[in-house]
Image (cartoon, rainbow, N blue to C red; front, side):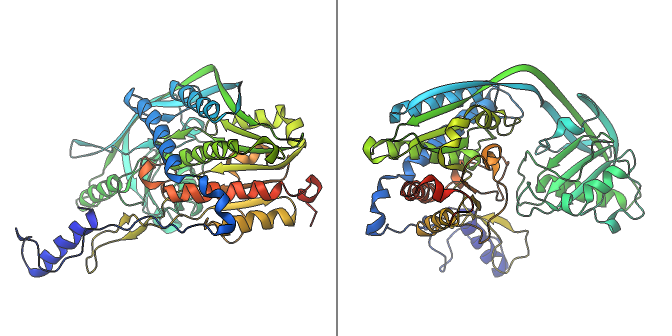
Length: 499
């Protein structure tokens, strides 16, 4: 029985004025969940019926399983990380999928350079001698840029500044203290109020010894969070914690403040720098009948289970390989290059390698596409009707909308726009957002991207459960239709400036 139904039953018992009865009430909702939204393709699009969302969802689950091996090996920062065993296994997995589909496969190694990564940490608060560990604590993604030292252990007074607006700092001395900031996601840890309100900037400029950001997403998720507003100096450790942990801190702080006592924070961390690491791009090629090309890139690395980011994009990449491999070569006008990059989160040397080493391919590319975060369930914040409890994230059967953008002719932009609409791929109305993995090659040829950054971005709740098979199917079908439509046009018709 799901949580919503349990909550309904508990609420009905509360309204009745007593504990839940041993027998179910006479009036209750049926225990039947909604299913994923799906519509059959029109006859004109039946060509793309062979693209199987359920099969691709299985690939998302396989990639998540590789990530869990990293966790089970004892890594505190875990996932599919370039330069680690999980990164190597992921690229081997991609190569095998490409080979099985019948592609010509090459492994192109490149240097990762120096990699500084947090390997252990702990954050807790102390009240009346009792240390409360904040288990959701995680260093921000750029922790190594701002930490005062590679290893640290500090015990300082803590200050709660709420949202961290200018008024919230009035009368509060935060110098040499740990500052807790309550941050509103808009909609995720990528863009959050602690950055755009200026809270982290105020705390750093006022001399904080550490910053702990409470991300106000229901539950107690751990995040590998981006955080804008930090300066290069002064150096200080910056962590995020989930909402449950954050509310515990606020409650303790409020209780102590009533008797003019102070909360303390204990923070420990260790960052290791590794030199001379390598990673590799995996390139699969389906030959066409001309010397022109279509290129698709997708990054294979991800934090935690990385189901949407970027298991979904990788599943779509494999789905495209399998689909077009079934087409006779004479039906493939252009060579299809499918590229899995290994280190989007570790400097994106793989993307730069494409830009620097594949110029002849890009110069004759009809289109370069990015498959990134292409399918995620869009949750809502809700609570049982009539209650005043804190809302939770409730699963829905709707797909999250994505950023999108096209670099090329108006005709190309119309093809991309119309293809997304044909298959029900939700996007923002206006083009924009981030091109993500496409950035190193975005201007090297006509290009487009589809890129979701919802609530579960870089969170330990980014699991296969939130990746709908239908979203994988429709996004991949849209990509396939775009490539087919592009193959009807000459290179000159796709370039910027052409109608």
